[in-house]
Image (cartoon, rainbow, N blue to C red; front, side, top):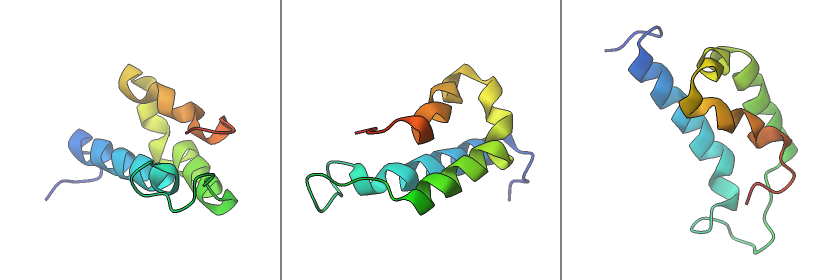
Length: 75
């Protein structure tokens, strides 16, 4: 079992947060054509990025995802 300092675990956790963040607007899962991400989901993702996810902001691979909560229509 990986520890919380394991890079593979941190990467997986980050990718899961992204998955659940965009789930409601993904073309294969959205129920309404004009679906959007609710405020609670945006707030939760921001909190994650500011706390546990902040370490990955130093990597080019994940850096662009830090803008997601500030994009009006990420679709």
